[in-house]
Image 1 (tube, helix red, strand yellow):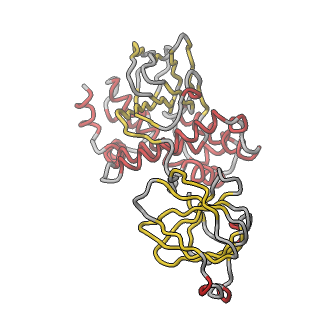
Image 2 (spheres, helix red, strand yellow):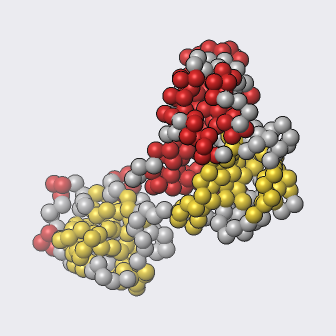
Image 3 (spheres, one colour):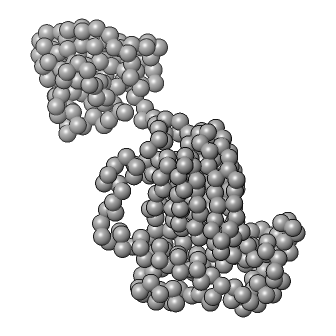
Length: 382
């Protein structure tokens, strides 16, 4: 990565030459260094006395080292003076360049070294997403199992889900995440009386080892939950940028999980305050999920979790980028889809059961959320 050439960053290797002094040695230059953009190696030199340098033409990157092995790269845009016994070389920056140097003794050629990549490149890469489903399952369902060559992420949004793999039965509760590796057989099932809702994403990933994520479950931090919700929102939106947004959000999510898995400190809450905030939101989400067919409001919800409505609203906006009222509305609408699939109530009865003022109000919100009327949705699933 190329760093800014300033006095603080460059101090171990030399100093920036003040503007009033930069031209004093122009008539006494002892070396010129040519930088060619097509070369795959660079020439390394070592100073035997202080060397003043400045760009003659073009643009270049100056790389310096105290041991000849570990180099730091600087965008060479200011006159400098390098100390004695410092190793240096030059990289092209979008074209050829010439550097002028002045010193009592010429710098000594040491040899060549392969060119480094000067860009800040992405290490973990999501190469593509194959499936991205929001699963709404019936009570006590059983998925017999599968394996496929790509990893898969499972996030439980509501209820509980058993995930079985490698002889382990992992119970995932709301807010939990599990990762299955490539060609790792896995199955899901729910206990009787439990109708889980969960997200599954299968994808290709390069640049990181996911072994630390396998055969375990993670309690998703609020940042991870917010990313999954944003991905679902992008999936509903699906404009020309949504695919890239979803891939970027999944990349960030995987980085969060890998950091949490790799650092003992990452498994702990950063502070009691953050722990308290997460617990309040989790309790609120659990209450909404288990009382979705009751009349819910922000004041009622705040009372149940022991905070003020304004504080609860601030927490939801901070951690989930959504108001608690909108979250309640979305959970009720997801519940209505399950009720429509069960086909045991008509639309008026569903609206009443979910505490909508009228069936027309329910139908309008359903259409706004899913792009279909309740009748159109019912036809699509029967």
